[in-house]
Amino acid sequence: MHSKRRLLVLIVGLLVVVLLVQAKSHPQADPCQNFYGVACGNWSAIHASDAYQSFLGQLDYNYQAKLADLLDAEYFAKGGHDEPHSVQQLRYFYTACRRPLTQDQVLRSLEQLIALEHIQFEEMTVGLTAAFRLQVLASINHYNKYDIFKQLLARREHWHPNTTNREPLTRQQFDELWVRMPKIPFPEKEDFWHQVSRLEAELTSIGIENDETARDELVSWIPSFWMLPWPKLTYRNLHRVTRLLALRTPQFMLTYIYLRLQLPPEGGVSKDTWLMDRDQCAEQSRQILSHAAVWLMEQHHPRLKEEPLLQDIFEELKQRFGQKLRANRNNFTRRTQQFLVRKLKRMRLRLSILPRNASATTVGQLIDGHYRHVHMNASDYFGNLYIGLNHSSPQMHEYGTFASPFYITEKNMLIVPLSLLEPPLYAHDQPPILTYSSLGFILGHELSHGFDSEGVTFSADGVASRAVDRETARNPRFQHELSCLDRRFGSRRYEKFADASGLELAYSAYFDTAQTDRKRHRSTDNLLSQQQQFFHNFAQFFCSDGEFSEESDHGSDRKRVNDAVAHFKPFREAFSCGTSHKRRRQCRLF
Image (cartoon, rainbow, N blue to C red; front, side):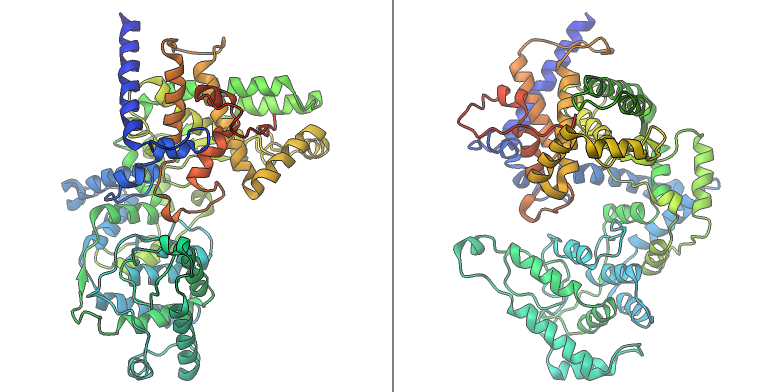
C-alpha cells in the first residue's frame, strides 16, 4: 500500500511538471542545441507582470513577503516586551521605510551627503537610493561604481513623466540652481559647469546604430524616476551609459543629481510624496539587518522537518563523488588521494546561514551583540540607511541571506539558506525526482567547488596544503583537463566545472543504484520520460528574464543550462541527440 501511494505521488508530480514544461517551453527550440529555450522559452512572458525577474528571484520575493507579514504583525507593531534588540531595530527600519517619503526629504539627505569631504561607497549608495527610489544596493559588498550604475540601469519600471526632467541643463538653469547650492567642498562653479555640460553632451550623443539588429534591441523602458538626459538606446548602449556614469566621482554624481532633482518636472506636476511597498521595505530590511531578519524568519520555519531528507541526499552525492576520487583517474599519490577522500568525508551540510551548534536563544543573543551599537529611528528612513550600510563585522559579514547556497572553503561546509526550501523549488513530500534534479544539483554544484583547482588544495580543516598544491600543479592529466576548461570557459571555468559535476552527481544519485542509497525506492516505469523530466526541472531553476541578463562569474542563465547538458551523455541519449549535432568531449577534473 505504501509503495502504491509513493508511485501515485510520483505520477502526479510528473504530470504537474509536464504541464509546467508545456506552459513554459518554446515549441520550436531544439533541445540538443538550446535546451534552455525548451525549458524556459516563455518564462519571461508568463512572469512579465511579476516583481521578480528570475526563478531564484521568485524565491527571494516569496521570502520577503513572509518577512513583511511578520513585521506587519500586531505584536511587533506594539513592540513586544521580550522582543530582541536586533529585531526591534529591524522593525524600526521597516516602519521608517513604510512611511510616506517626500522630495524634500531626498534633497535634505543629499545636502548632508554632498557636504562631506569624502563620499565613500555607503554614502553614494544612500544618495542613489534616495534619488532614484531604489531598492538598496547593499548586496554589492565591494566598492565598484560600475556595478552600482549597472544595477540602477537594469531597473525595468517605466519612467514617471510628471516627476522629473530629462532635458539637458541650460546655462541659465544651472546658474539659478547654483545659487541654491549648499556649501560643499567642491571645485569652482565654472569647473563644475564644464563637467556637467560635457557629461550631458556625451549622454545625448549616444544613439541607435545604423543597423536593423540594433534597432530590434531598442530599450523600451526608462529607469524609474530617472532625472538625467536619456537618449534613444539599444541594450548595447546601456553599457556605454554605465561607463560614462561610473567614470565620474561620487562627489560629482551626487551633487549633479542634487541639482537636477530641483528642476521643474517635464509634465509641470510634481509627485512630492511616494510610498514604498511592503515587499520592497522587507527586502531592504533584510539587506540592511540581514541576520536579525533571518533569525526572526527562522523562528517561524519548520526547518528540522527537512533536515534528514537533505542530509541523506548530500550523503548520496558524497558517495558518488567519492567513487571518482577512489577511481583516481589522475594517478595522484596515495597521500594526496587520502587527503581528498578525508576532506570529502568530513565535508558538512548546514541548513540556514545562522550557527546550528547553539540554541535559538543563544544565537539570538549573539545577533543582539552584533547589532548592539545599531540604533534605528522609526521616522528617519535615509538616516537608517546610512547607519545600516556603515555597520559591518568580519565574523558576521561572510554569510549572505538570499536564496543562493555557497561553500565555505575554510570550514569545509556547504550552506543552504532556508529560503531555498520553498515553492516553487521545493515542497514537503514532493516527488523525489523534483528534489534530486533541483536541490540535488545545487548541493552537487557546491560540493564540487571543494575540489576545483582552487579548493582542492585545502584540507578537511580548511588549511592549504603546499604538497597537494605542488602535485596538482605537476599532474599531467589534472592540468590537461584544467586547460580544457580554461580554453572553453576562461574565467568561468570553476563555475562551469561545478555545474557539469553537480548535474552528473545529482543524476547518478537519482537514477543509478548503489549500496549507499537510503530510504528511497526508484520506479523504473517510463524511464525515458523520467529522464527528460529530470533535465527539464533542472533547467527551470535557471529560468529568467534574459533581456538584460546579469553577466556574473557563472555566465548567463541560458549558457549555464546549455553548457551543463551539452556533453552529458545521459542527456544526449534522453533527447536523441545524434551525430548531426556537434559533440565535444566533456572536460573532467576527476
